[in-house]
Amino acid sequence: MARLSDIEIFVAVVDGGTFTAAAASLNLSKSYVSRRLRALEDQLGVRLLDRTTRRRSLTDAGRAYHEQVAPLLEGLAGAERAVAALQAQPRGTLRLAAPQSFGLRWLQPALHEFMERWPGLRVEVSFSERMIDVVADGFDLAIRGGSLEDSALVARRLAPITGVVVASPAYLLRVGTPTHPSQLSGHTCLDYAVRRTMPSWWFRGDQGEVSVSVDARLVSDSGAALVAAAEAGLGICYQPDFEVYDALRAGRLVQLFLDWATWDGALFAVYPHRRHLSPKVRLLVAHLVQSFVGPPWGRAQ
Image (cartoon, rainbow, N blue to C red; front, side, top):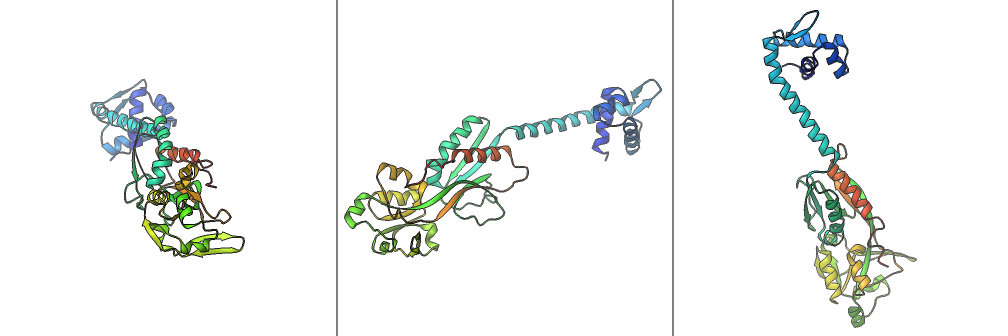
């Protein structure tokens, strides 16, 4: 099979009319163009051009060959232009996964702004507490919190998060307000199912670290469900600051242990590849980084 570059040289000679014009259009030397054209003719076993001192003209075989290969080269050029256009702005479908409570409250507004800016993009979003496999499940990226264990994924830090212990005013009025983490053992607690592999709630204060084992009355993989239960007065929950921000501001919940530090972590955008990252992923990650500066939920206290 003939080399693609030799075919391009042949078409450039035909279109330009001379070796000199073809060499100039391809940024090659005239001698190289002539040599490669002879190599193409040798490969095909036919003469493509009749050469005289005054002009170059197509043979019958050259004319038939040009009619076949010129549209193919134009098709390849069109494909390259299409790819370049996709690289210039986000198009197609972007598949995104995020935890449900965070996604519905905080991700959606940022995502809506992104979609308004890039109307040519179609977005598919999965809001779920399930830990999805970004690659196996066919997602372009996912939002995750806490520690990241999959070293095969690229992670971009979006915003800090910290744990907050909260209860409703009604619960505290009925049962009393704990002033030290050790007193949690005498209270009804609501715990996150994903965290049940951890035996206790962790705190750090002036006198050192404290780990408190809790006997949770309600366990759920939904942070929103735990917050709702806490608002209903069912007990004390330990959730990320973004999860309880609205309830704290509205006074539906009260933060406990203000003098104690809790766990600190971060939210990340994770995706499979850094090299040749698609514009849709690159631009969305940059948009999310900007959207969560601060972050918008602030610190709960």
